[in-house]
Length: 172
Length: 438
Ligand code: SF4
Image 1 (cartoon, chains in turn orange, yellow):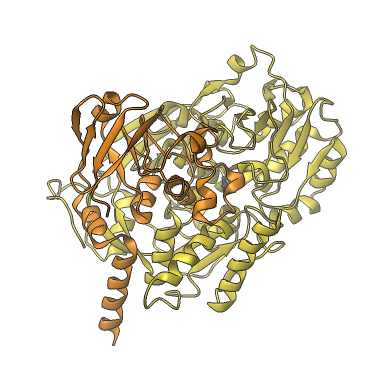
Image 2: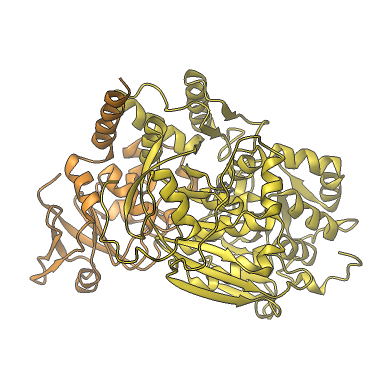
């Protein structure tokens, strides 16, 4: 995991759903970079042209609601966006983001304390969010312990490999 | 078990969802918030979620085979018959995988339909089972008393190889429906009303348990419509108790043994919601969220002219739905200002509709009848909306861009409301139709 992430904030409202994050017509694309070119196209067609690698999406409640399409967090990651900060996340999007390694931060205070264009620095390991433009600091909600252990293990894949090994050991 | 909070309500009863999860985790009981490792009875994917999942699986060391080739269902439905070469590539990828892994339940074009229509129909869903799917509307199977939830492709890849998933046990919201539905008011209206009351994140991380005499009286299709849209309130799953009707539906389709359980009388609910439906009107979800729900009398105060009516999807693509639409359109012509697109939910639904003369009636009224599949529901193909177009649809989502252009508008309603609107050329109240015996 990256130690620190840094970029400018792009702000959106509540219920940013998966249909606007990556419209259905692009869901037959599996290439990450190609998907990234259409990130947020449904809500902000300019997003990918105005953002710079490292920039951060800041949004209100229920980010990522709607479908289970894993290409939603993949598209955001593929665009070069370094993280999403939201007041809350929809369930499947939250899980998918952790699985594919898109850093997500849950903090209502940070969302209210960050204006569009603010320079923001994030520490995924600690959940610390710094608004460098305003000189303020926020703390994101901690991940539940089980998810923390998944993240530390490097995502779901190493976890599955370990479980597979355990299973074959117990049947041999 | 991997991790769990201190259980402080050890003496409370369990909800149906908790019982199913506990049994699949090999535990006596589970508590909301607890993380469990649960055995799965079926893992589902469509050609989009499978394509990504297969890629992930190839990268998992030591994972060359799926855990059980009879417990995986692969259904081609989103972009098929392939709308372009890229979609054909994904469909082929899944088909090749099905062959390589000798997957028993693989449904190619012409032999399946929409995944959530196909699985119950084929007897692949039974009460008490635990099903995960690479599609958010996997929650549909709660209609038959199963715990079913949607996940992303990486989780599905893990389930393909492990035959188990990690889950956080949800707390449960109990909804009790009472009263009798009026003429032309159906399960879809009941569920739109519910989503409107809960809000699109009102049940996030929660289970919804449906109760009451109103839903007891519903057909299995009606319950499917309601469980299907649990995700529209953000829920992890939506579940009905399997009654005689549900058990009969399942045993007609499979010999597989299953377990029927019930929530305990002293089960712990996070919230209990009571809805009386005696005065319920047909409901419409207006743009651009499924919880922007209004009674039809309010919506029709404005003239809302339409460019398209869409009948289909895993919410309302069933034979019962097509029967209502055919009855309303029989012998009439749809309004000249719009087109009507019909996607029967599955090959079986299509064939049944053909046998009953429904397809001919619809075509004669001016509807375009498609082959089964998701089609326009998610803006994939076969009825994608253009800039400034407005659609009345039997589907489940109306987010910006859901059915095509971000500058289009989607209204959600029942098959009856959609059919009445097709005749009127604008959003119309099906109760105003002068139809003898409908
Ligand atoms: S019919 Fe629509 S909601 Fe149902 S699985 Fe297909 S795209 Fe998803």
